[in-house]
Amino acid sequence: MESEPLIDEALKSELAALYQAADRHYHGLAHIEAMLALASEYRHLLDDPEAVEAAIWFHDAIYDSRAKDNEAKSAELAEKRLAGRANPHRLARIAAMINATATHQLPPFRDEDALNDAALLLDMDLAILGAGSAVFDAYEKAVRLEYGWVEEPMWRAGRAAVLKSFLARQHIFYTTEFRDRFEAQARENLGRSLQALQDQRG
View 1 (cartoon, rainbow, N blue to C red):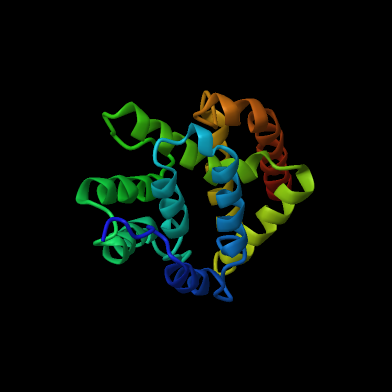
View 2 (view 1 turned 90 degrees about the vertical axis):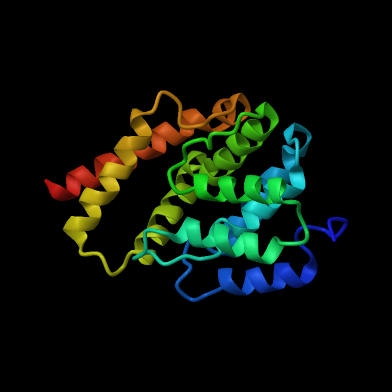
């Protein structure tokens, strides 16, 4: 039934169990809770807050650092578990937002409200980049643990490429609200992290 909440307590418990797996050093329940807190804070800006919250809950549900299709599989899981709770259009919107977290490029929504929701979701996902330096450094260490199978030279090269791609953007964050709050600190954090990687190579 569409009147059911998208994410009920049973589904929260099911998803929370996935996020509490031992190999989830960063992409775990704390990340989801941090995003949900931001969604609550910026709820007044969201067109469909429940859909955004559903996308948050599902966006990293499937996570294997060796895989390239985590977001696609997470979107498929969302479509399967939310069938009957959302109409096909709303379900497609949720799946598209989840898939967008793979590249952090906006999905091709024609609807301005849907596009704004997706922009806010992507900004919430990257808010950690603009955290205080100690929190950001802990995030970096946690991500490295998730990629513990990657040898150090390959890790440094790959991570440096990711950091450079973010720094090369005109704006890391899509929305004015997140840009004003996190952009300057994010650029400082990313630049410092990139310099540390380059110093290690030297």
